[in-house]
Length: 240
Image 1 (tube, rainbow, N blue to C red):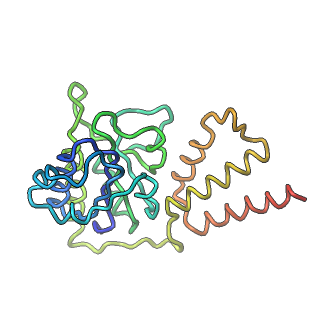
Image 2 (spheres, rainbow, N blue to C red):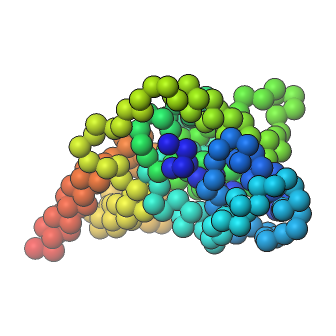
Image 3 (cartoon, helix red, strand yellow):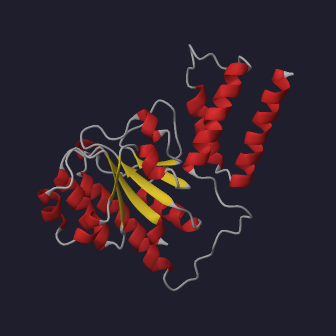
């Protein structure tokens, strides 16, 4: 199961933190590391801080955007240290590990910048937000330490499941990917503008709320296709 989990680090400033994250991953049996536009990489400091997890670094996938890092994922969980303007489904690390083992899905855990975390837009691309409940008076965690907490909970869940059969999802269709969801939302926005439901000059929070709705619903690929088909039929009707 854990080979379907990837760790995604966004815009990391210090290469030593990439090495620390790689070490944490290897300690707990994770292997897939994605780096989104790191400030400095490759780096000898990353190798040094990895303490032998060089294979994780050598196989790390470097991309320019978060969209590339999660396009083929079906479950995306983003780390967040604070409440946001629009409430989002929120879990703790243990609950996040439970989610990973509920279904056999391609999963990404996304970690933000050292100084400011993930942007609101980046967090809106996640199905869930995970919050590490550190003490309020000293709540800031080092990036490597945050990865370690998540990786530890995944490892513990794996050990608990070791002697029990992993129940595969009995859903009749595979879950929609992030990329497929993006196409749906782009299509929906286009139709909403055409029908004047959405004013592109004053979009407010309409599309983020639709994203939250669909991601919370965990659409499968057939359901998503039905919605795309419905939007296409509306477009054809409007042209008549």
